[in-house]
Amino acid sequence: MFHPVLPRGREDRTVLVSGRGCTVRDTEGRTYLDASSVLGLTQIGHGREEIAQAAAEQMRTLGHFHTWGTISNDKAIRLAARLTDLAPQGLQRVYFTSGGGEGVEIALRMARYFHHRTGSPERTWILSRRTAYHGIGYGSGTVSGSPAYQDGFGPVLPHVHHLTPPDPYHAELYDGEDVTEYCLRELARTIDEIGPGRIAAMIGEPVMGAGGAVVPPPDYWPRVAALLRSHGILLILDEVVTAFGRTGTWFAAEHFGVTPDLLVTAKGITSGYVPHGAVLLTEEVADAVNGETGFPIGFTYTGHPTACAVALANLDIIEREGLLENAVKVGDHLAGRLAALRGLPAVGDVRQLGMMLAVELVSDKTARTPLPGGTLGVVDALREDAGVIVRATPRSLVLNPALVMDRATADEVADGLDSVLRRLAPDGRIGAAP
Ligand code: PMP
Image (cartoon, helix red, strand yellow):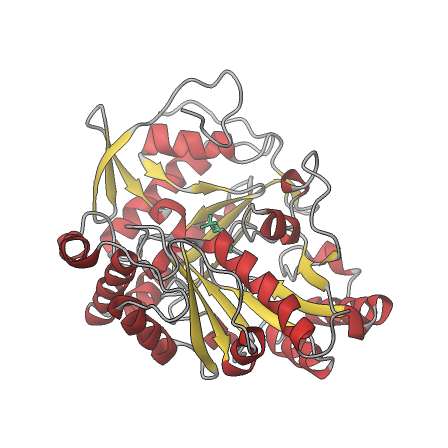
């Protein structure tokens, strides 16, 4: 087997075989607290019987049929209606995918195609942000911020420009200016330089996930959205991580009061039990990209009925069990516990919105420089010594607990982090476990 992101020479593996709630178990019978809900997606926790039943029933009835042209299936139609009921007003149409990166590819294509079909084919540029993550296709990997997805893979998608992300902890990025003011000025200048009539869209995660659970200032998105709209530039929100309760609301756009032209989802739509995703779009975009001949791009699994049945059962559970409310309550509690770690020498920042949390590790608290060697060693120590699984991002430990996590389990997660981070020195070394 080929494992992505595995350095040569590392042969050790934690091989997982089962999971229930917030706990997963490996081949040796050892259990771990999954504080990352895999990769920020198991909203309802592991091992839910209702999901297995919904999938089995649908597989027995109609495992798959596509939704191309004049053919559709009942589960895709039902899920689309459910999503548009939940979504910010104005997002009335749904294009189904099998994951987040696929959704971003579709959103990028639709953005350019929209302008092509509405008489502005020269609008081809896409604006994004450094440290963004949008997937690893050639389009999504180019709009992602990390050079790791571009260097050596070229030529990548042309006409992509990366802006400074809004990251309140890293005040040094903004020349002493207010974060939003700086970002808006940079955005306005960039629009001016490229030419407003040449830009198709801007894409962004409302709260950056893989970039380290970075919560922007409250006025960032409303002001960005207004500026884009004034220039006829479409806004694509990538809610692959943030949708379906992750931040305590159905969609993170609700926190900022913005409605994008296109909104990409995946992950939590099925809690990851089967791969699925959906791009929500306005009637205006849908109508333009459809045109007289129909939008020419469809995947084999667009509207997969088994995935849609699982998504419907998953959304039922999120609603019935009040998981949005729990995400706020337990997220706030866990953030309070983690805030107590701020006094430790290698802990720079602790931030949170709902069940998206990050602990940023630093070698120097004043310069806010990253830990030498990155965060992987700390993540390994957390798993091995404390039995807690969190996600490594370049500067931060990211926690995305399942929305079902209770306070007592959140306390166990916080205790695990406390025990390891207490032993972490600013040079990245971890002292022996007591
Ligand atoms: N967008 C965001 C914000 C993501 O976090 C991810 C995955 N972590 C993706 C897109 C890509 O999704 P996928 O891996 O399902 O292609």
